[in-house]
Length: 272
Image (tube, rainbow, N blue to C red; front, side):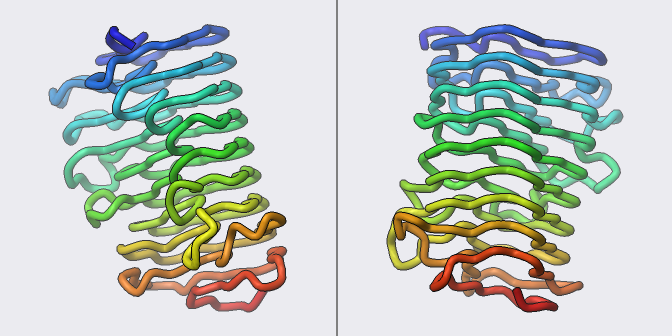
């Protein structure tokens, strides 16, 4: 871990990283293994990038194993980034991190981002951390015993997420060092379908599969998900913080399977 990133991408339109192996890379003041990070120049471009079929192990850094960090408004938004069919065996920070820094309009945000069919194993801090991005799909991933919650739209409204689709993911015993498998702060238009949350949280009185934390959300749709706790570690399927506000269209909760005794705290249009 006494080195920089394995790969840094500053200005690129068209890149494929496939079938590689990265181990013990990134010292504590570096982002991680693969860092997609244009400089704060509006003419820089990062788009049409594919990271596939690659193995990561014991990754250091302070952001994520694979990260997209856009430091300012870009003339050409970052788009069409695919991270798929990779394996992560331990990381100091998040497996995947997608961040737009600063307040930008929706048309200028990173868009068309996909994290799919990856396996993230025990020893990784968070499954993912996304802020300020638009039209993101997280599908078919398996997250196992990640230490802390996945994060969506952290704290500041300007860093909220719009149009997030999460479908067919499995969270097993994630968030065992804090309170939830997934923590949502600011999210507008979120679709959650056929995901599984199993024994997420730390077993405390507030342990939840999903926590709606301080922030604001609207138009959240939960369909055909499974919330279970065979080890009794989870108390809530969905827990809503008193500091979380709902705006616009209420959420929907339909066709979900929830273990007996798990609580749901949401203003919803339909019962389970």
